[in-house]
Length: 558
Ligand SMILES: [Ca+2]
Ligand SMILES: [Ca+2]
Image (tube, rainbow, N blue to C red):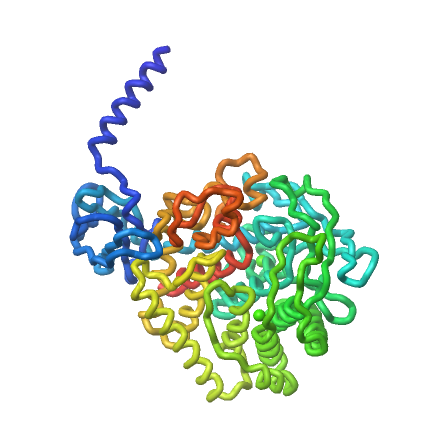
């Protein structure tokens, strides 16, 4: 009784103290991780008459600045002002104060801002591993039993085959428990391209089962996916599009899911994705496992041959299969990408010829990650790893990348929230991070600081400087997604979702609106932190890979 009375009094006292301090305003949007000492530092405040801001530390003012009026942001319906305090470079913990609004959450200025989230975003792939248990030594409270052994998988009639074949390992694709080659390929390419840009970025010591084997844990993690992808190749070289249930599993633990698993028909996009990622892998893994590298290259060449013979086999879900389709009507990017990777890895004249005849422009398009952006990985490999591509050719490609980076940068600079999006498609957060990847290559070509600042502006958006006020990565920030559309997080008994996952983010088309009601109608606010919102709150390997790329990039440049 006494202790109840005491805690009641303590609560009242706490309330009085809380009322006397400044309120945290949701209208002040910051990068919730903080800011790098020597780079751009901006924030957004909405719907205010204030014209200035203060940066404070322990109650004293450290910095004063003017707010810049950006006017009405059509995408969010807010009147937006921005503040810039890039001149403040001292490390420490601060908050923003604005008259009439209150204060922001506190944030750090620190050179070591992104390393923890970078490690977590890569560790997310370990948690997604299919067919093996997550051991508590590596997964801590998120340890779980193995699910989906995939040792006996059926051939769907669409394959023209009967019987069974094993197809274990690989990562669960997203919030669901299925495995798709197209999406695996773009994810592998994104992670391996990070490795080729910064071979030492990921240590051999990230606490996964393959740590301390003298191989970067990034390569170990990607190998887990490549091992599965090899099982998806048919004897004739063609690659099955996916390994899947007929219907999505419920929000159950992986080991509780018992539905039959199927290979579904072969397609050109999956086969070329496979060829490109295996070809890239072959030159990288040669350094650690020659025999494995040969296996990858053989598989890649066999796949490419099949695609040349079958250039337009578009995948469509058979009537009785409703899981992800990942359809693609245009194989030109995939052909170019695969030809480029095969040429870079083999220097064979036949692939150079293919490359020349498969030429496509370097292009960034919103909403097209696995359908179109894949072609750009061919270009990234050509400028950084092609030993016998003439310099003049490399220069042409570099110019095209810089031109695309410049146009992205122009849009970012004209946008109230400092981003490149003109539309908020399904997975809009990955569109922001894919733009950052283009800028990362532009920076590696030119070392122009402008590009770096634009990448930071895009990262600021992801980590909270946006119209929703969420930092979009689970576990990283002061206001983060708690109910992602993620079966692994939704089926354990732990309140916090598994950390390090990027959610899809605002989706102006609200493709799940028959199932849920959105609080806001504006494009930039079309995000719901509820498990049912697969169209705005799902996680996916091809969205997490750009997060890995950009956070490791930012950890390696300052
Ligand atoms: Ca290792
Ligand atoms: Ca395509």
